[in-house]
Image (cartoon, rainbow, N blue to C red; front, side):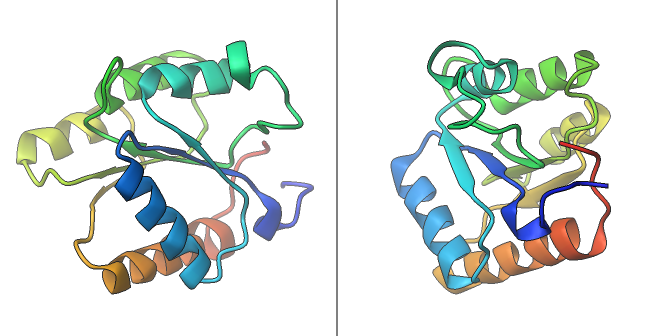
Length: 150
């Protein structure tokens, strides 16, 4: 059981598109989800964040996430590669990972589940749908599900 209140558990969001980052952040605010959000731009940054390397070395500025929202298609290291690396490392294996992508291709869905994702979600196209998605994710991961210790 986590010692932090569920509304204080951090969420790491890997998204390379600045417009999508803004949309996601606005949706969290509109859905009144108070969890702190930390954004990175690609899979390389995800791994540096989790390993506390480089600009992400400070645990106070970059706390370990209780949930990772991972875009599938990003530069440098994409979501597939980052997910594979996360699941291969015992230190990160329990981290819940929700893949969020514009792709609806069955091969992408099958691949991320095979690699250990906890969920695959297609990005909503409207702001209202994104707010509803965030509300449901929050309800599931922070009200219903029991999360491993962060």
